[in-house]
Image 1 (spheres, rainbow, N blue to C red):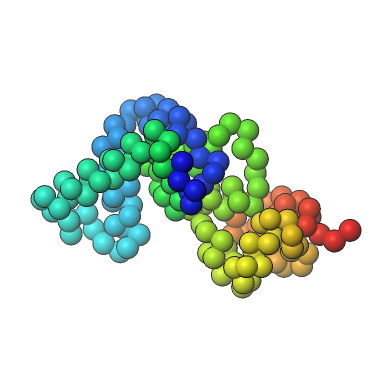
Image 2 (spheres, rainbow, N blue to C red):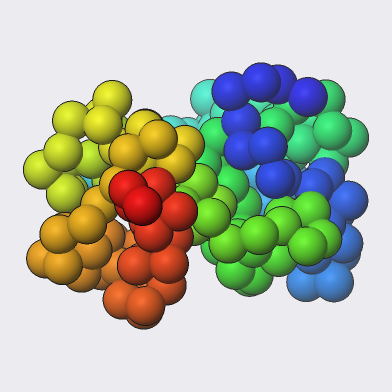
Length: 166
C-alpha cells in the first residue's frame, strides 16, 4: 500500500460498502470527481465530452487501486470515498481501529496542518501531540480540538492526557 495514505484504511471494507450501496466503481468515480470539482469551486459541467470521460476513467482506476489495496487514500480522499458510498469514514477502517487523534483527523479528511492551523498551533507541535510526545493541557485548546475533530470534550481530554506530564 502507498505509505502516504491513511494506514487504517481497509480495501475490503470499501468494496463491501460500495456493493452494499449498489454502486459500481464508475459510480463512485463520478461522485469523487464531482466532489473534487466542487471542492475547487468548479462544476462538472465545466468538464465535457472526452475530457469528462477520461477524468472518470482515471478516477475509476483510482477506486480500483484502493479496492485492490495497491494504493491507500489520503485523508481528504478517504472522506470523499466515505461520502461517495454513504458511510462514515470509520466504516472504511480496519476492524477494531482505535479512535485516536490520527484516525479522528483522517475521518474528517484533515491533515495535521489543517488541525494545527485551526488550533493556532505549529504543525510540528501538533504532530508531537498526535505522537503522544507533547500535551494539550489548556482547557480552551482541548475544547477547540474537540470542536475541530467533532468529538466530546471528555474524549479530547482523554486523547491528549497520555502525553500530559505526570
